[in-house]
Image 1 (cartoon, one colour):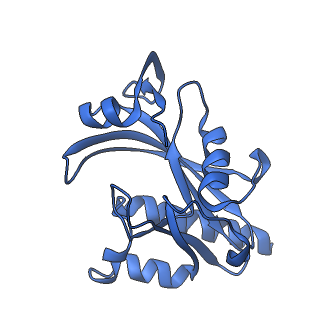
Image 2 (cartoon, rainbow, N blue to C red):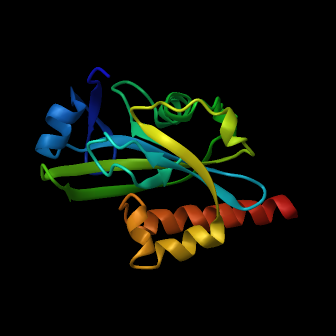
Length: 190
């Protein structure tokens, strides 16, 4: 996949008017940029997780949110959520499907190359009951997808050994998604 340009963001997540190559500059130099996470859940209270491909540079063979990616220069987080969901797992979603649940800022050293990952993540929920057998996975990104009951997901995240199977986002990001899914499920039952 060709390298893409990303917008440089200030300490408040606003575009500065400057752009850089995402991995070559943004990651290597710790330049703040934007990304998204798309968390898909179904009415049964399960979360759709992707198993990251073995050849991924970062966190291969770990479970992660259904889709994620960098916001390209000039793009919006919503456009990115729609694009990445289609590219990574072959699922078509629209702006109307997206439920914004928050932004988090991460400044974290990523081994083995010691990148300073300085990013604002826009986080979205999508409620969709999907037959995983119908999804077309992007093999260089995603090895598999699974539905996991929300209670099991939460329990595994808070267990020191079982949590190792997940991409090591800050726990509050996963906890925020769990809280917002439970809130959305409760709203559906009213």
